[in-house]
Structure formats: structure tokens, C-alpha cells
Length: 382
Ligand code: PMP
Ligand code: GLN
Image (cartoon, rainbow, N blue to C red):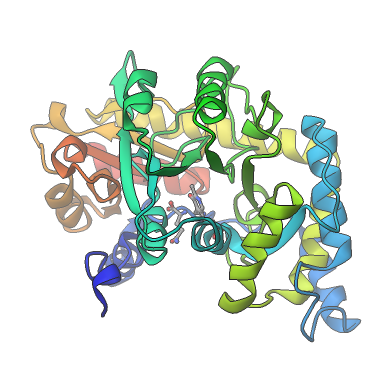
């Protein structure tokens, strides 16, 4: 293994899912739903397979039906206009979109400022691109993890190439506010930075939290690469259909990298996701309502079990602090948890450069059937 990758080992999601299989524990680690997405979308995939649409290499940028559906979605929800031919790129999940964006836009030695805790593929993709990651840590403040804008400003140097933002944020569940994002945007404009923004949880916001796409803010449309995914929004994480929307020159750059990573992927599923994106608003509302109830169920259960719960405003993850239970090492806690009570969770420390800062935090996924969540809570309380 080369020096760029040596520090990364096996992704925590594979490790913890394997542990769940081995021990028969309830898997609240890796974030995937245990109920598949809408029947009619699955039928659309079957129809595409049968009708021979996408069974051979689809076009490099993605099938036109899907690129149009992505552009329509961005217009309908956010008032953002993208040309489906030059400003939309279909990728093999958001994971490839992240990797291709960094490989395309970062020069060796460039610094990439990323929110910490960071989704694990960010660190590996920055490393593959030869960049240096510069984490800006979200810190607990009045029940949620918040961005300190002064720390963000201080992290930017003449070598900074881009900001890597994620909202709604995995693993903390923080949804950056319009005011916070406006400050991020002002910094990006002032320092003339590109921004890559991972918005895969755009439809998963709770209570009065509002998802504000960075590209909608002043000065950002031309300098922002926005990443989305069908995995989270439609509960088809195995299909690996993601996308990038950005200005033509940025999309062209990302596509230059993408063409040599996978070239294309998921032919028939692209047609199905095009239909999914056109589902009526009621689908998105019901999905959000169902996830809100699950969040409440698991948050209440974890609180009863003695964890300090950071009530998420977005995503389908709850970050907890294990110190009230008498533990302070999330790694040890998560390794012992399956044997101790039959539940798998993720130690947030893996998402930190500063592992000490992340040590007491543990993440639980709530994208599971209510009875599974209730069973997990019963086990954790025991
Ligand atoms: N970004 C974040 C923040 C995620 O949590 C995930 C996991 N789904 C991804 C990207 C990767 O998404 P995909 O499965 O579409 O590659
Ligand atoms: N995004 C999912 C999570 O955060 C995992 C995706 C993966 O396993 N690569 O749990």
C-alpha cells in the first residue's frame, strides 16, 4: 500500500458491519436503511432493465433523463438553474463525486479545509489527490456541534485551494444555518476559494431546520461544486447513483477525473432515479416525517439509557457522549458493545485528526424499522 493510503486501513463502516454480522448484533453503525425505497422506483429500474435501457455503457455525463431530472429538482426546490448538458454530472454515488472533485481540483501540496468530524472518505480522497487536510473542528455548544467562524478564517492560508463543507452534517446531525453558511460564502469570496459541498442529506432536516444549498448564496453559484445522492434520499444506498452540479468548467474538470475512475455506472438505475426525483412533494414530506419519528424514538431511548444525546437537526445519525455512562474511549466502547449488549455503533474518533477530541463521542444510525430501534434501546438500557 502506498504512503498516501497507508494511514487509512479499512473503512470503519466495513469493520463495524462485519462485526455486526459476526456477533448477530443490531447494526446501528453503517448508515443504510433496513427498508428499501419506493416500490414504483424499483419497478422503474426493472422496466429499464427489461426494455434494455442502460444495460450498455450509458453516456459519460449520465443519461439525459437523469441529468434533466437533477436540474429540475434543483430548480423546483432551490430556484437554482443548471444546464443539464453542461452543468450536471452523474457519478457512482456521492463517494465518487467527492473523490473526482478532489482529484480534479486539488494540486499536490494544496490545503483543503474540511469540517471535523469529517466523513471518512474525505480524508482518503484528499490524500489520493496529494492534498493536505486542514480540519476545522465543530464543537459542542448548547446541545449541538457548531462551527466557529474565527477558527475557519484562521485555517485558511495562501495554500488553501478549497473548502469542503457538509450540511446536513454526518456524524453530528448539525444543519448549518443560513447565517453560518453566509459567513462561509463571504470567506470563500473574499479569499477566492472553491467550495465542494456534500449535501447528500438535503432532504433529511427536522423541526424548523432549513437546508440552505451553498450555491444559492451570493457569489457562490460559480465557485461551488454541489454533491447529491439518491442513496440517502430514496433509500437505495446499493444503487450508487450520485451527482454533481456546478458551473460548466467545474463540471468538465470533475468529469475529467471521473472518466478514468469508473467512466460510467448504474445504467438502468439512472433511469429509475430520474423517476424518483420527479416524485411528488408528498414523498419527501412523508420520508422526513417518518425519519423525525425514528429520531425521536432513538433519542429518547438513548437518553433513558444514560447517554448525553446531541439531538440531530438533520441526517439519520445521532451523536452521543458516553461519559455519563462512565466511559471515555469510544473505540473501546464500540468494540465491546456487541458482546455487552448486542448493538453496533460507530466511534466518532475515526472522523477526527484529533482523536482525543473525538474520543467520548459515539454515533448511532436511526434509519431502521421502529421495532429494531426499540429492541436496540431495550438492549442498551439493560
Ligand atoms: N457523504 C456523506 C456525508 C455520507 O454520509 C455518505 C454516505 N452515504 C456519502 C457521502 C456517500 O454517499 P454514496 O453512498 O452516494 O456514495
Ligand atoms: N455514509 C454511511 C455512513 O456514514 C456509510 C457509507 C459507507 O459505508 N461508505 O454510515
